[in-house]
Image 1: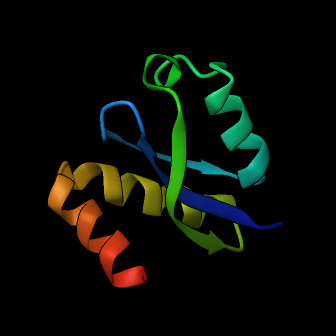
Image 2: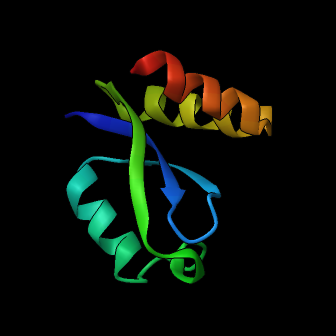
Length: 83
């Protein structure tokens, strides 16, 4: 199965959210419907970056790596270099 690590940006305040999912379009729909506790207040969201992995474990390790940086500049650099 395929897993995605994704970064969302809030169109409301510009903040970022990093997550992992198997179905990126379905997950985006859930975020924008307010069905995710953390992202509900900052809707709407847009996907600004994603990476694809073959297994959940690798995807979750990458998600943790991005989150552990706690650096807005790191996320902005990922997005900029991917375009």
